[in-house]
Image (cartoon, rainbow, N blue to C red; front, side, top):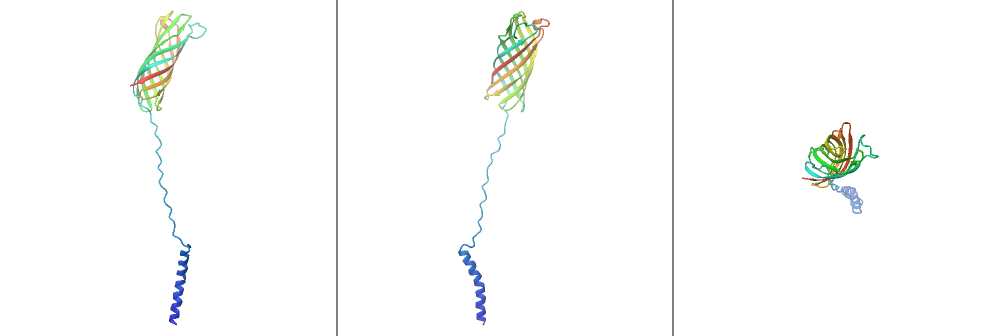
Length: 209
């Protein structure tokens, strides 16, 4: 009887084990699959925009166009003509702002018929306030000017001007730009009541050193 009971118990334990073994061999049970962790993705840092270094001396030349107007000039149209000259200055870059000073002189081909007056030269002493936008620098400028005329109005006349400009740093040593200036002169060549307004537009090229 005991032998029979032992056989029964053995069969009761063996049957589930055999069933599990059969399922495993038949593919019913499988080991868990562990997914590989994704590889880290390297993200390049965003580029940082930096301003150019505008600090330094510069010198160059300019070509442009000018027009004068006055109640004392009775020509049918305001006299116009070419302008050409040289300039030299210094900029100091403060980071976002650029401070500068410049001297320039223009010769002109501007003349009026009535009265017969030639505009010989315009010389200027400038202060400049610019914004460092990288290779570009827009700026405001103002200062004093001296007008030299000949003919019916012969002499030098002091006045003032203001305007705006744009410079582009093409390389570490070459700067291109443009400038528009509005001038005012009173009592030209000491002639009372003869006031002249002058507008100039110029293209500029400078070497920075």
